[in-house]
Length: 203
Image 1: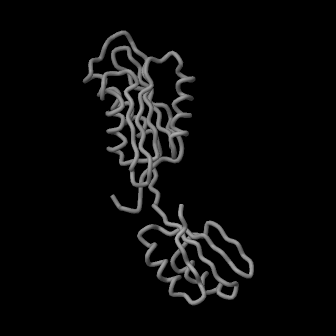
Image 2 (image 1 turned 90 degrees about the horizontal axis):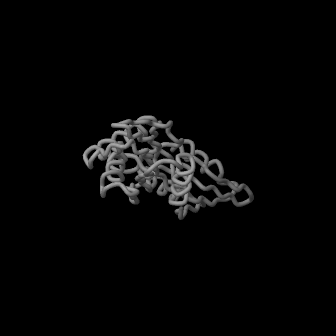
Image 3 (image 1 turned 90 degrees about the vertical axis):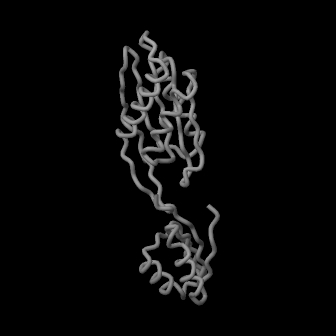
């Protein structure tokens, strides 16, 4: 994978359903950016499916895919959360929570059956999602006098830089967002521009 892009979803999937020997498995994928949102989505599903037996899930967070967790919620160890997490890896996605809700149908599926069911339902949920690619960006703050505006805008235009915040006064301040692999080049361009100050913004 490209180092400055990641794959995610920006809206929740439609409900996926998988059935095996009477058991029903409902799969959902949600876009999330922190553990608070993860908790809220799980609570929402627990209210919606209050008669279900298990709410198993896995999530992955961070543009560099650095945080993740899998939860079996009472199913045999590694029979639910891990296969769900395996699908997050297979689809190479992050900032996503996948929950599979199980209604027990009276027949035990065995560990192999469970792994297959949770894996398949998670796969369906992700297939029901619109997966998008986003770039990892770095932010910089530019400070300059109004008289330097034309110089700054020329670079902004030529390099297709997005301005995410601006304060225009006698002294101007722009917050710009630059794709990670272009960051060094853009920093250098502004740094070498007379009377323009550039510094990296802590995200």
